[in-house]
Length: 236
Image 1 (cartoon, one colour):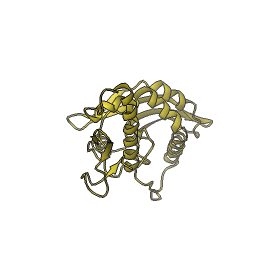
Image 2 (tube, helix red, strand yellow; image 1 turned 90 degrees about the vertical axis):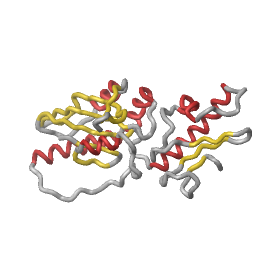
Image 3 (cartoon, rainbow, N blue to C red; image 1 turned 60 degrees about the vertical axis):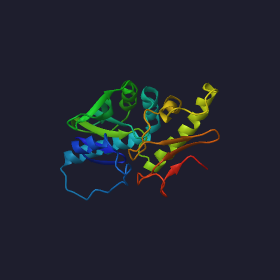
Image 4 (cartoon, rainbow, N blue to C red; image 1 turned 120 degrees about the horizontal axis):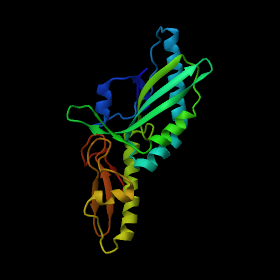
């Protein structure tokens, strides 16, 4: 069984979906969960679906533990995605995750295939998933998931959180640069904000405005145009 879990909704695996998710994020990053239409399935398929549903629920139940693994390893941004490839083995008594591969989605190759990067979070993730008790199953199965590090946060919430992180980072940066009023660029604050880039969820750069008496960080918002009603700003 191969499944892509993008944002909050599980769907049949489609490589194009994974590739597009690893490049420019869509406007709707966190889709509303959908209810699949009823369908007739063989008993074995139902068995696989039960194991997957239980695993998906367990992953969401332990999301704070998994996020701690990723945070310690990579300091990911909320929209960072990870590929999980899991091997499951089961019998009449129950099923367990026997092997776990974790890769960070780092972008796309020239041919639009997904570019994967190793992460030291893998042992931490594997240890936690190995203890999950799953429903009985008939032998081995494989599951492929793509999971966002924030377990589904809306684009606006991501932008607001990032803007706040840069404002806090500016205060910390100021302690180390008392002789300088303003950073040369917002990227100067990345290390203090624990951010790896300065693009908002709509693939536009955050904008810094800094003067002798004010510091402001802005996102152009969903319409990607600064100076419109949907702009997001740190100014109160």
